[in-house]
Image (cartoon, rainbow over all chains, first blue to last red; front, side):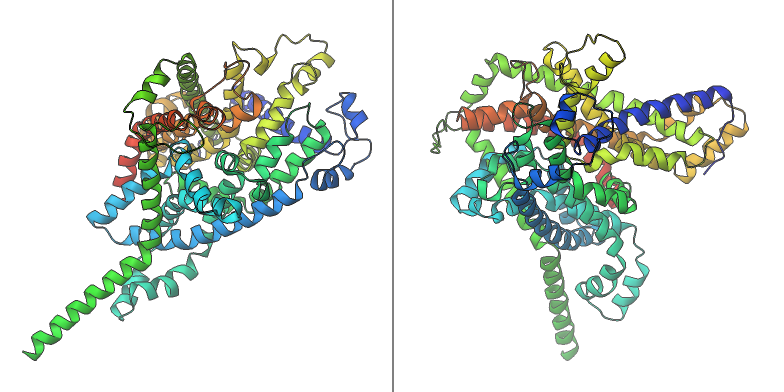
Length: 284
Length: 305
């Protein structure tokens, strides 16, 4: 990195102003969310939103999880539903995406170019353009009544992303090892599973985190496809929103439960997270 | 003769191997792609049919539902709002990201970079449903956090945020910019850090070029591909915007913040006009398709060269 660092005073002032603005803008929402999720209802009604809670009300979280008189949409079941759906989609998308991405990164024929273009367009396909057929398919096949309906839809939609992300990582993976194995007579499939996969586990971790976050946070398809049995966490969260429906302290507790897993992933696996985001931007 | 036979056998074996390889590696991807493009074609077909109740009706009606949309006032409100999203969701984010990324390169404080990164990147992990929930509380005119803080400072707040039809969309876009800024900064930062660019910056620095000059005449012209990627991603995401609008305003007040994606859901699922909803889907897809063309060409070159 170039020594561009500057010691001029105007720059220092500018940096400090920007830092203060950013800190306020980005800490305020999460601070308000966490502190108010621990307050009692009378405290919320006093509207001292920036104050600390007098006593941390962990009961708010059990209320949000299992429901109470003030909070009619228990989040526990949706969290389980989302975990199942997201877990299965992440595993399958990474596995199949790894296979597809590897082929696209190693074999350069007209055919793979065509697939690549199709994948590239599918990557940013607006869900609105496929939602009516997807609802019809899942309803006709009865998949809508189980987790498989959403699992299928999310797989269809996330396969292109998983393939491109994995492929981006494989592109930057040195070919020499594979070439020498090929000379020894190993097939591409053997090479992939014995040589490439074991050293690509960090790449798989990055892609898994991205797909996981994407699917866990998805709202549009979950909202249109939903049946009460397989309601996801985002849809349940959306139903609690609005001051007329539930008090802010419980809304914030439910919010924290909803973002908990991806946020912890980000905080503890930030490195993989950032690498995944960059791979998604084709930066590798 | 034996030699030729052996050679032929070897050839067929190699062919069989490469077909097998092809199937193992790409079959799942190809199958899912076929389903995806199949549903896309199917949706187009629905948009030219006459599906107006819960039961599908595939009678061909041509462009009837597109005409229906074009005669709808709401459709044009949506188009205007989507345009606002495309411009205001992208331009300020990109400018702010370049400015911030450059400032981080210049800042003489140690540790500032990882602090800022964590600070502004965490919203990437959050869903728009949750962000929308928090921000609608921040924005709430009477009991909201912003106006309460302003009142405690003795300021009578003039803002009603998303309750004001004239400015509601801008307040929604602000949430989007807030959420994507960190993402934008790390993409710009990563395109700063190529060896060639670093050398050029070094040379300009030694020659005594001013800091703003280095930014505008050395860095920006040389990170065009990074900017292209970022602009494309932001354009697509602001075109697809649904969650923020749905959660915070439901398209209201009235239809002031309605966008194509929310109109699509209302038309297809509340009014049960599946064909008209499908037509909106096709329109959103066509806009998205045009927007990603430059990006796809860039990606194709980068991948295969």
